[in-house]
Each structure stands twice: as structure tokens, then as C-alpha cells.
Length: 132
Image 1 (cartoon, rainbow, N blue to C red):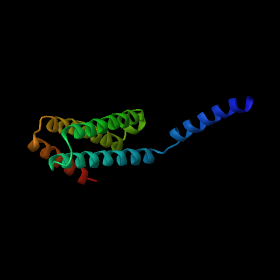
Image 2 (tube, rainbow, N blue to C red; image 1 turned 180 degrees about the vertical axis):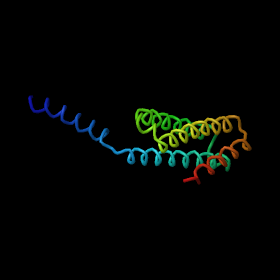
Image 3 (cartoon, one colour; image 1 turned 30 degrees about the horizontal axis):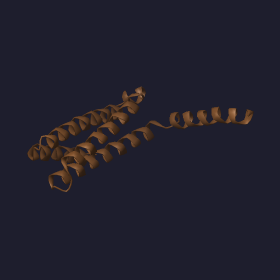
Image 4 (cartoon, helix red, strand yellow; image 1 turned 30 degrees about the vertical axis):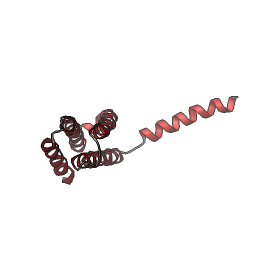
């Protein structure tokens, strides 16, 4: 039994090191990638809803799930206080905040059946996605 008791702390230490040993650039890259993926998913969901390919309920579910993923990403990023103090970190944090508001606006537009508002939200998402 002594061996398993030593393995668990070693595994836990390895996991903590793996999480804590990432460079600031790696963390920024991971969060940017997540942000781009969520923007693309929201855009695809909105486009599919506008074209009638998916239902309102399905689109709301996708957008809710995207918001939950974004909230988790934002919470993870908020724990990187030294990184948030950098220009790149602040810019990324602001982009996450903007995406959260965009997801909420798109959700409301879909929920209300307002295609014009959904198109405006998607236009804004595309503009932001096209920026470096």
C-alpha cells in the first residue's frame, strides 16, 4: 500500500507543475485559441439559425454552452494576475469581455426571433474575428 500512497502525491505534483509551468506566451496563445474557437462557433450557430438549418432552442443551447466555456476560460485567465497586468493580457481580457456581451446579445436576438439583431451581432463578431 505504500507505493500507491506515494504515487498519488507525485501525480498531483506533476499536474500542478504542468499547469503552473506554462509560459505567459503559452497561456496567451491558449486563451486566444479558445477565444477564436468560441467566436467561430457562435458565428456558425447564428448563421445556421438565420438560414433555418437549426431551431431556436438548439441555437440557444449552443450559445449557452459557449458562454459557459467562455466563463470558465475567463475565470482561468483571471487567476493569471501578473499576465493581466501586461498589455497583451489586458487586451485579451477585454476581448473575452466583449465576446461574452456578444454571445448574450446574440442569444437575446435568437430568443426573440429578431433576425436583424442577430445579423448585427454576427457582423460585429466577424469584425472582431478579423482583427489580429
